[in-house]
Length: 396
Image 1: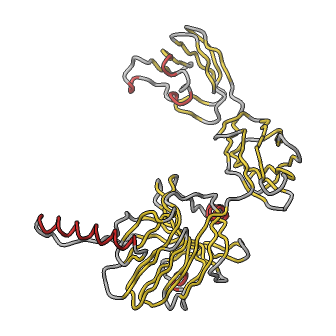
Image 2: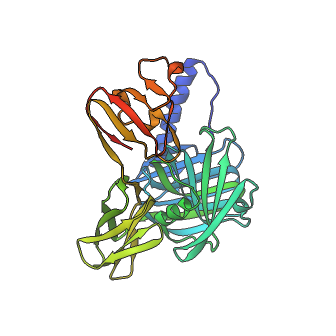
Image 3: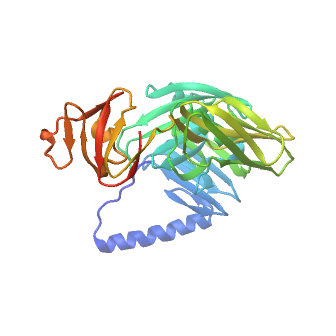
């Protein structure tokens, strides 16, 4: 999208211009046809139409529900489409119609995310020359199969001056073009993640667009939403969790289907299957989990063979903490931390209560100036006298 600027007219003329512009826009929307930049809601669907202020004849006609059509001739650049003001990762987008892209044009599911700013395309059809995947600044990442076809994944960094700050584009480009079908958007998001291509945390609008550049053509597209008949969610663990090794992790999930019955729920660590449960409540106990970080997910499969994957949940399994009870006053402890650890880090759990630490050769006093203390690190296997201001528990 590009920025559009107007001349700095005297205030009186500006007011007249704004009044004329508002009236003209209202007339256009009521008449269903747009020829100037406009966005809003029409017949329950969010629409967006943008064109460069340059040569060519360009129009977008708003039809019933999710329908729109576009015509362009010798157009410099434009895009237009219908969809939703609020994007969703789990939305299955169905679309149908005709697309005559001429030379440089595309038909794609398009949207933005914020926090981080990401612009994404799931490209379903294009004009005679697929310039998008041939661009020198498009980085090829890999390919995957989805919705009856193969998609190639690209990443592109946008640094040129636009109304948006520098940002990254994610592309899924279908190798077998089509003008009708269903886009399982969650599958694209899942594949992008494999290459470190994560969307931002806030979804902006999500629309099925026709976009063209220096070409002539037309399209007539109807977009709709297909809600997955399956749903699944992790019940436990439900957020990032820290456990002590060897860990016993109780995995539970809830699953439902509107088109059949749930056949099973499978539990995974990444792509490695841990186990499954054939009946509700769906659960699995993962025993003796070693040190490490694990990304868990669950997959529900219904009686029709349809499956859906849950969001991932992370767990961190750490060493079992070595707990030491310190009494008020003097104590003697041994350091179990491997290597040589700065004293303020080794004792960070009780640091505000430490008054003095010493061994046979050096010491630390909390009231000293830093350069006067000779004990600055604790060494593995060494013993230390430590004085604390009150009783407390030290977790190494």
